[in-house]
Amino acid sequence: MAYKISQKQAHLFYQALLDKNTAYEGVFFVGVKTTGVFCRPACPAKKPKFINCEFFNTAQAALLASFRPCLRCRPLSPPYQVSEKVSALVEAVEKNPLKKWKNADFAALSIDSSTVRRQFKKRFGMTFVEYARARRMGIAFKQIRQGASVTEAQLNTGYESSSGFRDAFSKIMGSVPSKLSKNQQILSAAWLDTPLGSMLVISDDEALYLLEFVDRRGLEREIMVLRSRLNAGILPGDTAPIRSVSKELSAYFERKLKNFRTPLHLLGSAFQQSVWEALLAIPYGERRSYAEQAKALGKPQAYRAVANANGANRLAIIVPCHRIINSNGELGGYGGGLARKEWLLKHEKSN
View 1: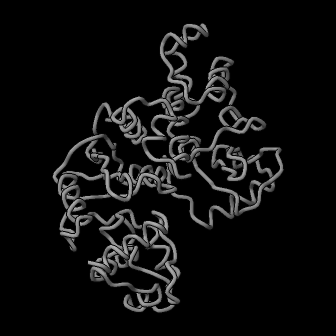
View 2 (view 1 turned 180 degrees about the horizontal axis):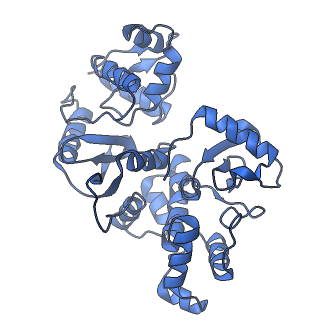
View 3 (view 1 turned 90 degrees about the horizontal axis):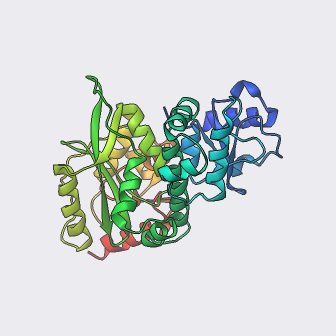
């Protein structure tokens, strides 16, 4: 189960990393931004600065964030011993992370695919195919974040068709449970193309849960958090809210719509929800500072907390966190990138 690492936990994990504390083995993994690898807590390598660390509670989350396993501490092996066959497959993937594995590939290595599947699932919480797919998609995500187009990332990672690439993207977000309990639900996910880039939308039959640009950093973990908190599987699909927001986004970009009416599900704390409701109250074409937003909520000293809640918004454009800027007139931050924020503000102001 994946969850979002808080700032407090990140500092705790960083201290454990400095101490090479083996008590934290299996509790977290650390991605090192400067090298692109992820390690276990007791890795013997030179310790990075805190600012260059990104913490994850599962190896799969680290893979989806485009980090590769460290060759020194081998985070997919210790602290548990794995068979030589599993280790050989992990090394084979790292030699060629873009390879699409088939049954013939296992036979060539004298490895039984069903045995490997069970061993990977037991040790790592994912099958070998899921691991290999996560590595490929992690590379694609990284390329998109670095400026490559979705089509370029798709072709660079070996997907000949956009539908295959999008299907693979959807598969990392969950599968239908063999038996649904009373508390489990299935959410639908779709890929939308907009003038500002591709967006991912997730909904149930009644409301939207997520609308984000696919190159937003941390999107993969937000999806995992959504799955975890709702105990839900996320599958490719089509729902009334998805069809509704697709039409409304087209109208918005064509300057024919200013207020979205697709039902929303604001999944967050009471404070976060109050911040998002305040964002929805900002008129089209207008801007507010973080300080003004905090004051409107009756919490004038809580502008930092307000800014954090804005950053946790999962419904880009519709819940208009792009309308919040710094008091000095500078843009401030935006999960979808400052270029998009500037475009959205100009788009609304000119209309």
